[in-house]
Length: 332
Ligand code: TXA
Ligand code: MG
Image (tube, rainbow, N blue to C red; front, side, top):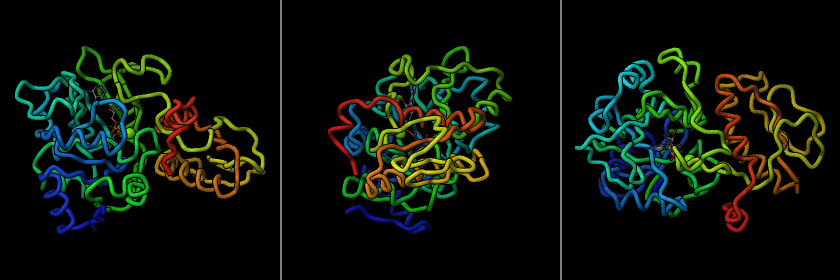
């Protein structure tokens, strides 16, 4: 039911045609696969929430082929212009005030007067955005509350039959979502750590504040940031210093001995490699856990520097107490 489109001019043209017709098409970016819809078409955007099973209308990110196209829809601050020059295309999402002329459906931004915009650093995604010639709203292409997809197979795991097509551009090189930065107010606020490091941003705009902790004010600035948001099926234990035969170990560097299954994020303890492997690792360990009857995913400590901040944010969400709905509706 869901078309699998190969990367290349024909697949891109088909994907763009489907998007322009109001259909949902998942596509790869440098971070994760997005579930794309024409952002100017409120019906198409509504069907994104439906396909994902998102319980609330959390605001979506709009994707553009270039900064000029994004800034035609939102009004950039001086800092936003500098960040765009430095990091776009790239894994940075900026929240900015909508312009009065912005054609993006209000539902895309969940009715807020701001809009999250980004230009992905990915040749296929950029070609698709150019061919579509409309802002494309795209949350991560997973069922709500589950692990983000970094391959077309992951997308189909959750959304087969629920979306028109997936444009398969292979694995996503960065592997964690974009960094979300609120630039609508007087000072930049980091709403979600992600593929662009805080250090890189601060080198351009100076010190930035953290908008929330996973437990605090989740609904306030970034309504999509539920605490338990990246939940594998198995419970998750962080900062493991030992492992037993009942543990599925997510290793970073030399693995702890004794686990029932091991997924190596990065043998060399490289944070970029670990970020790229993160969601694949959680999925694999879940599958191993089911097959082998394991009790828990045990996660070795990852340092909180550079991409480690984004990795730990996702891992803390994976380990957070689950809302009851997750327990009742296992996805896979
Ligand atoms: O890397 C990514 O950003 C991927 C790819 C597909 O581009 N997309 C993605 O989208 O992760 P999503 O919907 O899973 O996450 C969007 C995040 C949510 O936490 C949402 O609450 C926040 O951005 N967001 C969107 N619009 C916002 C706004 N106007 N104000 C504050 N937060 C906003
Ligand atoms: Mg997501």
